[in-house]
Length: 143
Image 1 (cartoon, rainbow, N blue to C red):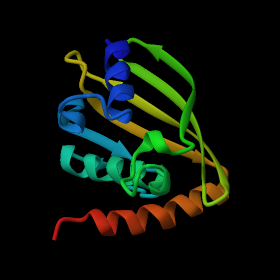
Image 2: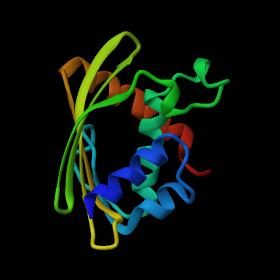
Image 3: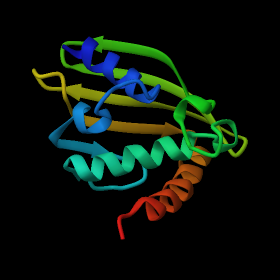
Image 4: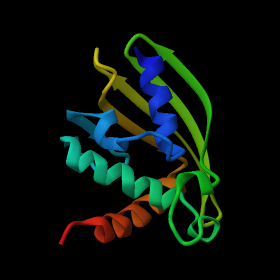
């Protein structure tokens, strides 16, 4: 089951998955952020965090002014898939700082993401991402 879920996730990142996060995420998904100490519960808040992360990692100058993860230095370097679980290691660079981390994803029997955990290193990257995500979340908040 996890193989199809991750295939859909990669297609979403490339902007090629119809329905996007609304289709990929389960209604009761739980998001664990490296910068917030409490789990974020539900599709709407998880979408907000994932959209903010995508915009934080993107390079608008390479995307014609529109943030797209595919226009960034973000890329997955390794995948471990088993049963309903996946660990996707990634690397990126934001504002000249190297970022290394993992996305730990769990899907349900329908292939929808029910848990999404993000872990980032080194400490400078965590601090930078905290600043960048806070600014991006503020921009994305509905008025």
